[in-house]
Image (cartoon, rainbow, N blue to C red):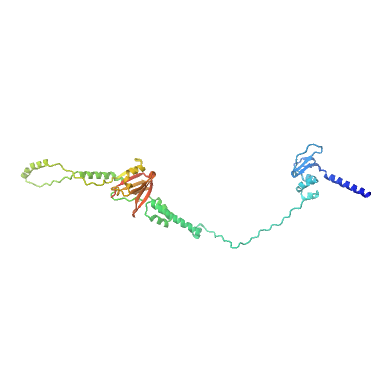
Length: 357
């Protein structure tokens, strides 16, 4: 009987202790901003705590754990739910003094420095060079120099065509003096086209026309015969005077010299200047139609055409092709053969037609 009473008493005491431990923590707790909150704990989660006033009023807002002071967290940590969330906010010494069990700190292993391993067959970096050493001391540099040299000769070839130089002059000088050679010939004045004997300049056109006019007049009029005067006796002269007068009266009028047998009319020099005439495809086809033939007829076969552009004078013997925007002319070369050049009609300032030899 006594044993049964002891067991019942022990059970009641344990139940009372558990009930007291289950009671929520209540009191006044201080915040970091200096204010205080009173009540007992109503709800706890990871976001904070909600308190219920002791007088039974409305619930408070949720306070975050970081808003409480260390002493307030110690008092709140007596609740097991609060200790689970707010225990890490306390120093380990304070948590140990408050009887809060904190998880052990993680073990950190010491970091070992990385080990360097030598790589087998490692390629070596080239030695540093200046720009001239890189150009003349490496294969890519030599290839680049060769390409620049070849392009310079190629440019000299076209500069020679543009400036009407001989075939190998400008490319040869460009090979010996790269860059400088083509630039020198490019800034030089263009070489004039070939001139034939008997060609007159523009300033001598009027004088040439006057000379031709006087020559034609001389041919049209017969040359006057010179009179031969001899000494005669006075009686013979007196007797011959009436006979000479009668013969002179009966003499017929002089007959003009017959014209030469038929032949091509000589080509007259003429100039067409932009502004005075409209130089276009139709004008050139009309005025220079004989020069479009594969073999022009005389006197156009021996004649010359001179096209004056800002780039210089272009002397031609034939027009192979023409379009509304450009014209192709056939220019004879000094060493023999011809060269076709294409000119823009908008660039042509003057066109001269001159007779040949």
